[in-house]
Amino acid sequence: MSNYSTEWLAEVITRLPADKEVSSGTQGYNRYRTQKAHWLGWLTKKPGAKYFRQDAPDRGAKYVYNHIMEPKMLLWLISASGLQAELVELAKEESLNKKSMASSCAAIRKVVPFQTLQKALSKSFSNSV
Image (tube, rainbow, N blue to C red):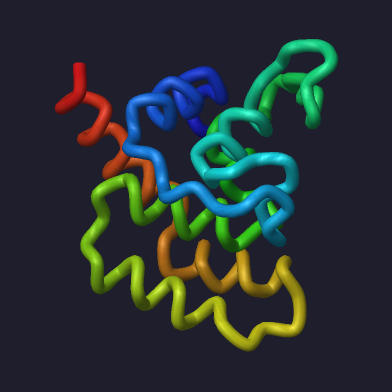
């Protein structure tokens, strides 16, 4: 189990730069205009939120990262985290031409496992405090 909570992940994402807004209704964005907003909407625990997420004992940031099934969300997060551009590009390339969103996300996570992302986010978070 990861020691990093979903609250930690939401706080780190709040401090990351937003991606470019897209037109309302763009595939992969639901009702959001950026992937940053998509992440924060997904992580919220407020009743009435689009994805009212309930916590469970073993479901921290690592669990969330490993269960997202939207490649655009993952690619934005790893890009915004400050990871090397070559690694981000490799993750993007590996995710292309997969038969499903789940297999695209698995390919991204194979290139950038949570431990790699967590280190980058922790560094980014400590630099922004």
